[in-house]
Image: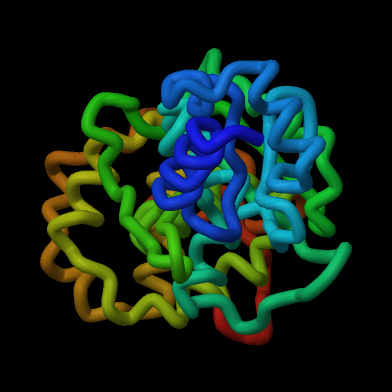
Length: 261
């Protein structure tokens, strides 16, 4: 490798956080074209993670380092959400490890996870959902989480619990949703209000309010429900349950004695 290419590589490495992926388009913008990438690979500076995606030689990269590239280099709004965001921010009761870990990612309709991200074995189960649950404009309720040398965008706890409720009952259980809601004693009512007004799912809004009132959180009293569109008619969430008269959703008859009317 000549001195010019070595200098270019040093510049790339300074701009490339350890523990993350670099995509080909990002490298090309910095003058590292395909032939030079091949040269770096031959000299053991780069490893190929997938088509158009690379890691530093010998670097250990998990799914968050891949998400960093998806967000910062490809400019997509895909983010960690639901239970995953709650777990990373310390709100979940437990954090499963290894192959049983389910990572929930959310994106806007039409956004696709890169093939290299989908096909790489991150050692977790991936669940990617595109939804109109919240408008892409402004992306309300998104926060930054430092991961050491880099940071990623996640849903705030206020948004994450609503994303989790989107999956109830098929992807997440009613019982776990209630347990997670119990721990959310410090949600910011202003942000909750904004998200409820922006939320596109009647089911999520009704279920969110039902669970917050069951858990008797103090911040609920600061919400202005008159500004929230709860839709009309009934919504069946669980079969064989009972109808909550206030929010007109079917809920379990009893969950450890806490869900009775």
